[in-house]
Amino acid sequence: AEAEQACRGLTGTWPGAWPLRRDQRTLVVQPKRSWRLTREDYLRLKNPLKGTTELPGVNKELSEKSGPLVKILLPQTPSEMQLTRVAVRHFLEHSVSVECVDLPPDIPRAVARLAFGEKVETLLDDLLRTRLRLRQHVVQVQPLTREEAAAYWEKVEQRRQLRTASSDVEQPPRPPAPSPSFSGGYFAASPE
View 1 (cartoon, rainbow, N blue to C red):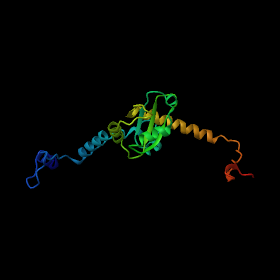
View 2: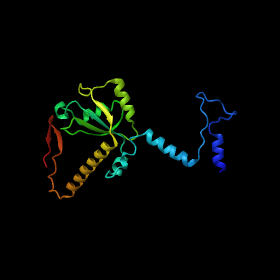
View 3: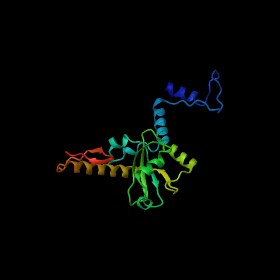
View 4: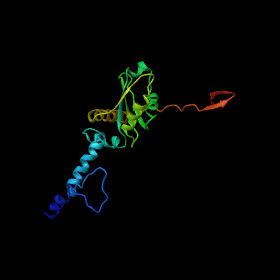
């Protein structure tokens, strides 16, 4: 009861012994419980891409180690543009570090995983300022929505499970690859 009364008494005031604020704001006093809720709301609004890994069916272990996801909307399919993942990666790395680029050949869209700690805003601001083009084309870069991120991580998980399942199947042993050696100015396989 005393704490609530003290909170009400201090809210909206400014102690005279303190230096005046230039923005003319006053104190906001609240119990720690409501402060924690306010802080959680602030953090959630500050970084809307955080928390996309908390959706059902998403492998948290994979997605928590990654930075934010962005989609690059292309004017044509990558095969028509003769576009590679490396070209998309170089395009994005003018601003931010990129962890991975997924580039389906038949869809006019790429998805890039930025490195952990990178900010989508930094990338968008830089692209807006520099007007950088990808293979002479203006492309749109946007953060993935929660639903798109969930679908993306589900596909990543499916591909990982397919790779794991195919590696569990016993493969016939491969013959050893010849080791190249340099002889007489030409590369040739060394005789064994």
